[in-house]
Image (cartoon, rainbow, N blue to C red; front, side):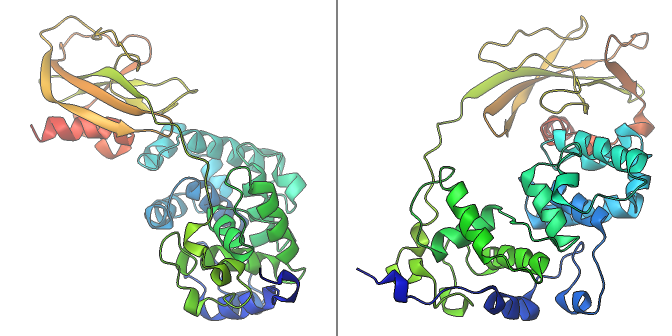
Length: 354
């Protein structure tokens, strides 16, 4: 049995030395060298990146971040934006409640805080759409507050560093305690980003590069030979499959019939095709009587909690059709498939490729 008391302890200084040389170049980040010269991150850009990165990869976010910050360079600009424009730019990133909360938060910051983000965890956590992780990340990275930032990368690093075999999510409090113990008073923002970079580039889920890790000596899992087994996770239940119908109606002039989904729920506030409920036995009820034809291909999409299969039906939109309820007729020259959420765009792509 290993003598844990005699094992070298990890130190933030070692990690920060590595970070100063190997920090990732990210569009929302201030480099360690610039930070040392007194350049501070823009809290707006840190907040925006953290919201976008929830449940999404850095690679997927970069283009969205560039478009958002080019079109709305400040939080005041975003607060003044039209909801539909923001939802359209967000299309494809998924988890659309984030986009609705993004607007709510921007408007609160602009109206109630003079366009300036609160600089503490307690102030940030009160803003719409900002939870414990995001509040900790913004306060640490943007304002250098001594907060503990715990994302998936940090969880993996802590589980391996201390050879913790308790499965996630049960292990979260223990992992956060370990991460808090390592967070320094000086440069806590750089430390938080360093641990995340370590997890993203070296302490990766598969085949971690232990030989070049700055914390390889004190890493308990490396010594025990268990690094690739960690972190352990509680097995997930199989996802159920839901079914539905989706209706694509287009006029002779090329105008499309769409509907705006309710603000709450999946794809809330987004424009999409009219359709049925999504369940085990959906009712085929088109938005108007017509000779609806099956496309002959299905839309398949996976959400967080279920798989979805949609049968696609097509019909010509009558020239005198009057939109009902939340329906809208979008003129051909105003219709942008890129504004549709991914599952709806899949239906359009099937139609286009038929």
